[in-house]
Amino acid sequence: GDREDLGALQYNTPAWGPKYTHPIEDIAEINVPVVNIGTYGKDGHKLTERVHMKHTFEHVPNITYNALKRLLA
Image 1 (cartoon, rainbow, N blue to C red):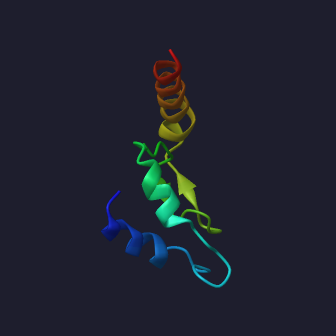
Image 2 (cartoon, rainbow, N blue to C red):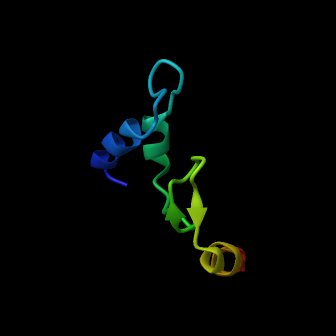
């Protein structure tokens, strides 16, 4: 990501700084591509969390499996 993304990361990490440290400079030096494969839903990590079940339990495992299979081939 870009340096602008760091602001979003900090904003969405409640304990950023005093309780949570993230070696940004070290990670930036690695410079590897990243893909975020995850669920689709609302209210993640809350009591009211809900997910799209077909996407979460069918599509995501297949996408993850195929991505890893191609990367490790």
